[in-house]
Length: 97
Image 1 (cartoon, rainbow, N blue to C red):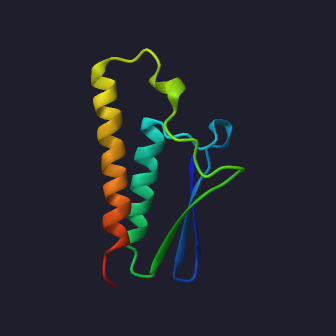
Image 2: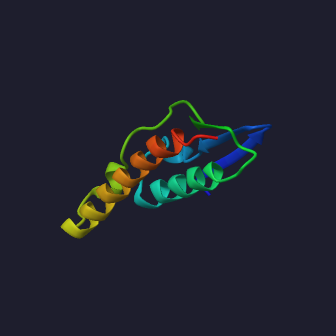
């Protein structure tokens, strides 16, 4: 798993833990991160979700190595997942408790 979740009382820490790639955002990594944030957002004991990068950087951005040589369908799927992840981070952050 490239995403770690740790809870301290009402705070959930969602950690990016893809250290070998400097937390670069691959398609599967973004899906895993989105799922973790959604899961924590429906936990009634969680009041704050902190997304943090483990290692020396938060995230290197998209995983360029994964993108190399792919077809248009892959790029559409990748950027759709990215948009969904960003919308999730924004909307789940605004949920009233």
